[in-house]
Image 1 (cartoon, rainbow, N blue to C red):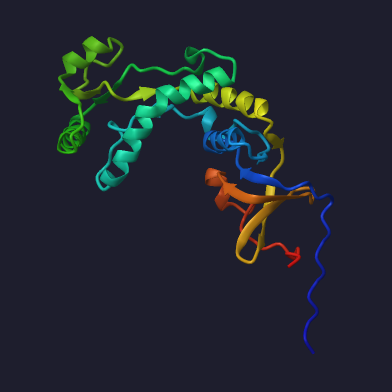
Image 2: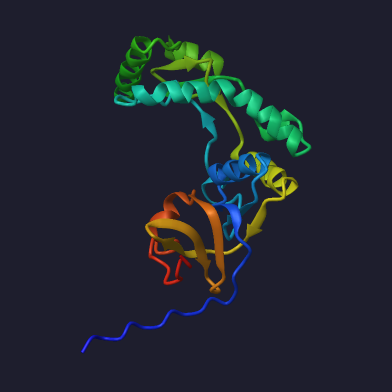
Length: 244
């Protein structure tokens, strides 16, 4: 005798489908939602606290040159192009959210990476060599030259790298502007956890929220960062039939 398959639990509510459903309201999720809405798509974001998470504690470094690592040369071109476009992106976002570019905390002041001991110094020397081999502009400074640029540095600084092309933005101000821009673009926010994906024929078609509400979409974007590996929004199939 074959065991009976347990019946599906009916969701508490089913929402009208959107074109795009973004799971995760961090910087990447919010930018994805905003850009999608700009293109005339209906968009929803699922996150219990959009604009929270890592964006509240990140340094906001736009450091394509300083953060270059061995083995990432293929990624370098993409990072450099992204950095080149960032000023225009910041200006567009500021206008869309009714702010000035300075309100985003965008600073084109360059990066100073310093060595506090001999190991740091050897690492930065190796990084400097990689940067030069990759055709990047960076300048090696002595400890005295570093302290001249930043007087609050400790006297024991052994040297450092100056990279004028690397910039910075305040992630907290950035997400605040993105939230406003999304709201003005009619992005819908569901401030709840996505408990699991709804998968039909090996394709994500939506999510189920903690209260059982089902959200459906033509395209689902997972932008939940580290939380995507947790039990919430894990790719467990929905028992909802596809209707075809």
